[in-house]
Image 1 (tube, rainbow, N blue to C red):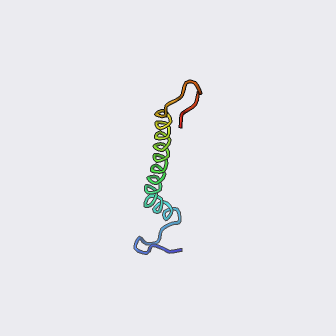
Image 2: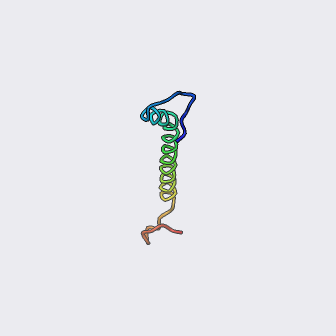
Image 3: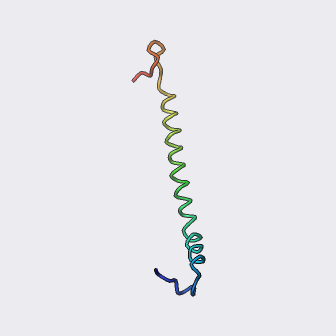
Length: 63
């Protein structure tokens, strides 16, 4: 394992905390972006579904 010498000798717990603090926000941001894109796609699909005219005689959407 690479030891970050510029920070001196760190306890393993300190190393883990340093990595979590350094990269954790980017991981959380990536998760938020993925979840928002999925929600936006579902909303667009619902809007497109609602905009499709329904034939009252057939009870289904005309295509």
